[in-house]
Length: 262
Length: 314
Image 1: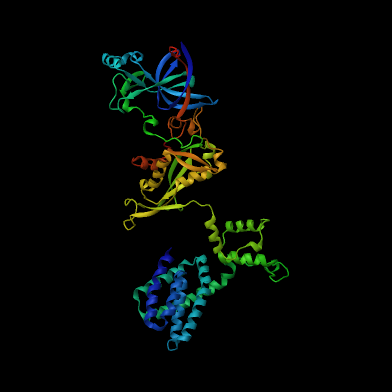
Image 2: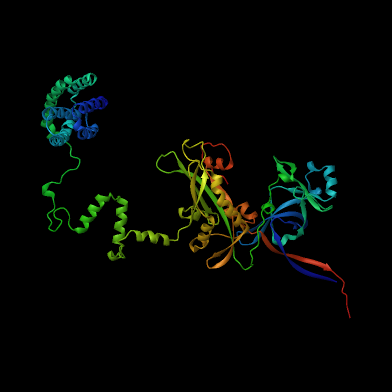
């Protein structure tokens, strides 16, 4: 006798999944949960290959041997977009450089393949971009009914002359909210002053109180928003600076020009 | 150019000489001379000559009279400023050149007897200059602030006639002049006064009251923190650390989230897959990071088939 039933499962971005594509069962990593313009959920998936799907120039006897003990290969961009209905189930895949004790016969990844100049190449998977879920863990709100506000902060730093052509300039540090659309964000009333750094002052030292506050916000914090408790998560998404300041922030020698660094 | 260069020279010996000959007059003469430094070279000469003259006359007299004569000198000096300014315009270079040379010679020698002789000569020359100056003065002088013609003065009656119409304009005029009020500040004041809600009885007389009101404003708290100053960019005498001022990010976030005018424009949803990327939520970071986008989703794992046997228990 058999029973047909549906199960509701919670998926997080960063999870490894089986999905179906053209009737085939494939491996992948869920990178992002997005919405399309017409309000449907879309999932961005990074492909993972079995040995048989590897491009011909990368097939070798040693890889074949490793594949028999569960090795699969991560593929770099382009990523694939699938619908939620294509998801089949979760799967556990170990990243070789993240876990030390990998159980035998479990699926694991140690290499990433990518296309460069129309040729397939391979590199160690620890050189791939880390998915944010690999290094960020956030807490869930204490109550599920609590509204969640996630804030995308944009830090902007620029020197300005204090008076006419006085040599000693002052460093202004401003905050913008990436949650605002561009036309709102550019308004001068929506630039929020964080503070001013005296001439020659140490930027890192200035930022210490800000950084410690942001670290609290990254974990989530209860705030009263418009009369009710809300779960507020804020992270520094972008740092904008022109070239002299950008080089200072990045630790490069300065040169006079203007550039936006994202 | 030449005049100005020479101008600084004759003053010093002149001062010294005064000190030598009339100690009691130092206090009064020196400031005079210093004031004249800003004036023209010729003025200095004038004063010098006048002093000389007075000195001869008054040597034996008491201080009161000398001081009054100083005042005279000042006035004369001021009068003759105009004369000298005429001279500048007149470009009487030759004569002046002569004077200068004489003056230089006098400086070098610094001999009292010669001084007096030359001083007298110069006095004559300057008197001559002065006469010329008086002849042309009325034609060439420029008035910077022109006096109102008598027939243009408005004929109005009242307490403040003929210059102002009423108390308000008079008071405001004096206030503007006294405190050097800027145009912008005055325009703002006019706006306040012309507002229909403006009530003179509501004007607070004590300015300290405003300071207490300032504390009631919903301002953000300011944190201050000493930070190190790079010694590479600053003078060696400056301090190694300075106070920096900043606002708290949690205060800013709280204000923004509690401002419905701002939150109604803000987007807190998942990342959006859009062809045309214009906002941060179209980007990869928003989509992938649990800090910004949606990081969990409930999915219906469809059509699972489980086979099992029915165990009937009686």
